[in-house]
Image (cartoon, rainbow over all chains, first blue to last red; front, side, top):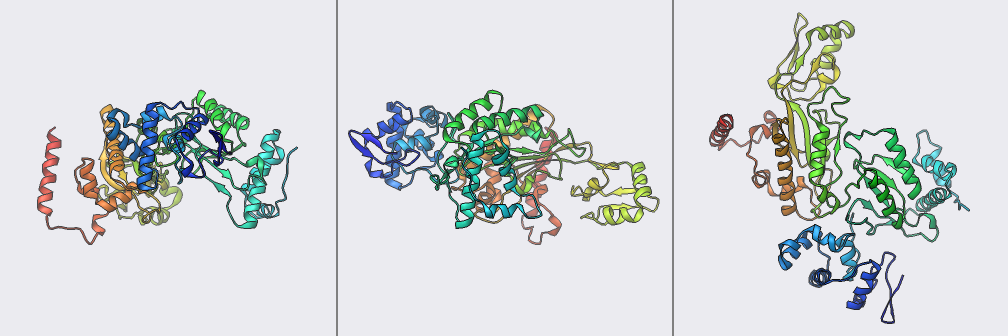
Length: 110
Length: 417
C-alpha cells in the first residue's frame, strides 16, 4: 500500500512500514504519523530523532527498556518512563515510533 | 457465498483413533450459522492443507496492539492471503483468566458471544501460558473485541518480553492439601506488575505461578521464574483411627508397598501395633503419602510458603528447576503479603537491570552466580536453601564455621526482634 508524499509514491508493506528505509525524510514521517492518527509535536520528534540516531549507530532498533532509559538520560528523568512513551505513542513505541522513524518492522515474539 | 477447499490430508487426520483438532474447526466451518465464521474457518482449513502439501508454514508476525497496550496480542498475517482471503489476518488475543480458573457459565457465554461477533469463534481454554486464547480476528476487530470484553471486566494477558499472565492452582476451595491463599497471592503479584505486563520492557518473559502445596499442580517449580509453593513447617497431622480404617480396607501389605516403602527419605514406619509414625524432621514434603491417604494424613497447622526463583524450559541453556531463595515464610498479616510483593519487585528490578536480551531469570542466575543474585535482591544465604544436602558431594566446608557463626547470629537477631 504506497503512500503519497509531495507527489512521490513511496512503497510500504501491509502494516504501513517503509519498504525502502532510505526513502525516509521528515515529510514522509509526517504522512506516516497521519496514517497512525498522530499529530507530531516536538515531544514526538525527540523520540523519532533519537530512534533514527540509534539506528544509524547500531543498525538495529533499541529494545523498549533501552529506549526508555536512554530517553530518560537524554531528555530528563520524567520522560524516561514507559508511561510517557505510551502517552505519545498509544499503540506502543516499538510499533508506532519505529514506523514513523522509518525503521524496519520490529521482529521477534512480540 | 462461503468458499470451501478440498482438504484430503486434513480428512485423514480425523480418521485416526484419537480426537483431532480438525474436528473442532470443521464443526465451526460446517455448522456455525454465521457466514463470516464459516468463511474464516474454511479458509483456515484451506491454508493448513496447503501448508501440509508444501511442508511450509505461511504465518508471519507483525505489530498489532490495542490502544495504550504494547502486548497481549499475537499478530498473524497470512503469506498466502490471496489464495485464502477470509483468513488473511488471523490474530490471537491473550486474555487473563480469573485466578484458579473459576468461571460462571454466564461469563463463558458472554465471552463466546463477543467472540462470535468479532472473531473466528475459535477459543483455547487455556493455552500453555495460562491465558484464554481467542484465535483468529482481523487487525480492525481486535480493538472492538477488546473494548467489549474490557467493558464487562476482562483484560489482556502478557505476550512478549514482559510479566506474563500468572497461574494458580484450584486452591483451598476445592483441595484439602492447600497450605496458602493461592488466589490472593496470584492477584497481589499480578496487580502489582500490571504495567510490566501490558507494556513489554523486560529483557525477556517473567512468569509467576502459585501452587497451594508441594504437589505443585501448576508446575510452578519447573515452569515459572517466580514460584510460590504452599507448605508447612510443623509436623504432618496423622489420624491414627483413619490409618486403622485404611489397614482394614486396603490391608497391611498395600500400605507398606504403596506408602511406607515409597517414601523417598524413609521417614515413615508402620509399627507392630498398627501405628503410623512419621519422622517429620526427615520429611521432604514429597506429598506421596498424603496423596495416597488423604483422610488419614494432612499438612500441619503451621502453614506458609516457599519461594523458588528461576525455573524455565530450554532456551539458552537446558531446563532449570527453580532455586529455593526463601525456604519458609508465613503469609498471614498484610505485612507478610507486602514482603512477598517486595521480594518480587526486587527480583524483577534486578532481572531488568542485569539480564541479557532474551535471557530468563534462571539463566541470569547461572551466569552471574546465585550469591550475587541474592546479594542483589538483599536476601541472606540460608542453609535451608540447599536441596538434598546429603546427596551433594561437592559442598564446600572450608569456611563452614564462619558462615555457621554468621547464620547463628542472624537467627538470634530475628528471634530477638
